[in-house]
Image (cartoon, rainbow, N blue to C red; front, side):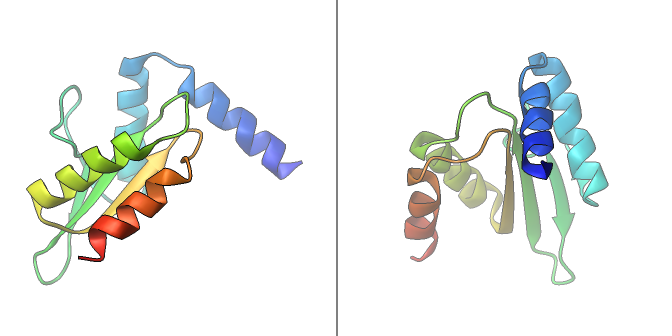
Length: 110
């Protein structure tokens, strides 16, 4: 029953307007303790934190109506490299295709 409720909640979120998804992404970032990024084009950052050593922790929310795929993994990896993030957290609306975690692991093991 809990999975049913969570799934339907996710469906409700991913079916809102793009503007509302941006607002929700910022709200999720804030609830998780991140400093929310700007609305609109955000350069691949919906929220940031800095570790004690000054390294960036990156939060990205992609509330897509479909599972995130290898192309999203490539974009996430580019954002991680560009921002020199020590840690990156990706929130997906529906989930991830099997290719995304594999691609991320393969590129981050270098």
